Image (cartoon, rainbow, N blue to C red; front, side, top):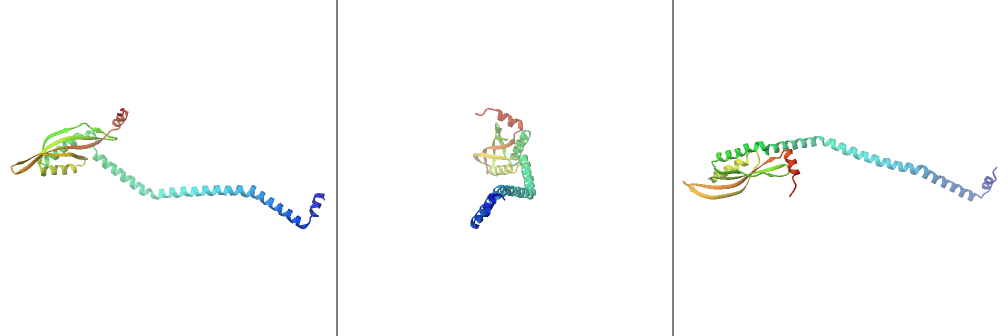
Length: 201
């Protein structure tokens, strides 16, 4: 037998136990270091990936559950856009719209003294189309005109209203009204691109 092994067998019991404990500790440390820790780290990584996947699944499930609601909102937005498109005319419809405003005024019993379109004011995707208007008639006719303009299918804003020359003609109060009627129109793609190319002041 190897003398070193014989020497170990001859050690007192306390030293044998201590040596055995040291060997167990070293073996346990080696097992922990080389086997347990790598597996533990891999488990943590897999746990994190699993949690992330679970979160992704929950988010996608939530989106899928909301799909009918989102589709409904999309359809409502499309309907609103269609309505907006009908309320903002294109350039070809502006003359007929202006003619419609004069017809509404005449139908309300007003006499048009001035109807003067002014230069357009271009904005981001639309243009203001202002018109100076001067009419004469009774207060009731003026009120009916403003109400009829408000009920037009197209957007027309009446601003800068000024009452002047109030008169009593045959027990009928008449007045002259100066105002600015502004409607709007969508700009075509070419107009928007041309406007972007112009140098800013």
